[in-house]
Length: 282
Image (cartoon, rainbow, N blue to C red):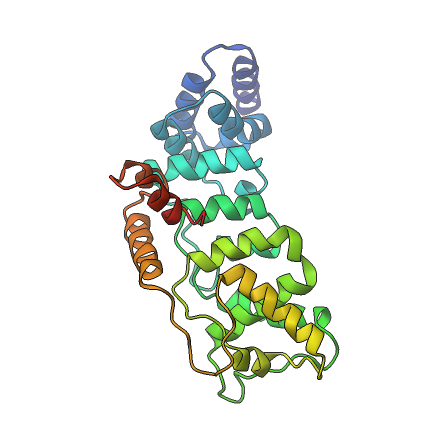
């Protein structure tokens, strides 16, 4: 009974006070001692929104996140502006939002559920996605229902390409068939964030058979070229990325490890065009 009363008092005070950020910060400190406070839905659901709306600083955001121990699923349910706000301040405060196992990745998860606004935010504030066993298996199973019958092959089984390359090509084909217009910008940003060589026509053919359909082959090649900004080479050999791209991925990797994405980019003494390049905007 006392727990319910205290939760109710905090809820009513939070709704009425003009010092919402200050009260939320105090609640964060209380939650560490009295875990039942975090069970109140209003405190849980409204806290991040109010911190965003009133422009709380990174320390307050970090304390609130830490005290209530938000998980992946809940954070993904936030509005895009709140989600961006949380990512930015968590990075500034050096707080790791997720400590997920190696087979998971929030960027790839957001893509799978078509939460593209959140994918863009994640790519701004986090490093390029890792290869994920879980996402790879999901993509392979899902591909059986998306791609044309008898069109999909498994070159990994025959030692033709690595799983990482197979996953990248399946991702291209997934967007091509499922969400070409809405997802193209996200796929472009994703491609700008990874150092992998360009995809060759021979690699593409090892995964997907166009069954002598030259128009379909041309459409797929054109889509890949629009995303990557490079022609799909005919030969099997890998076509490496440009040196400036490797510089971008190296700089972003260092800044990610230091918790400086993306706020730290604006502090670099570089021309605006280079900063835009580092933010994956071009």
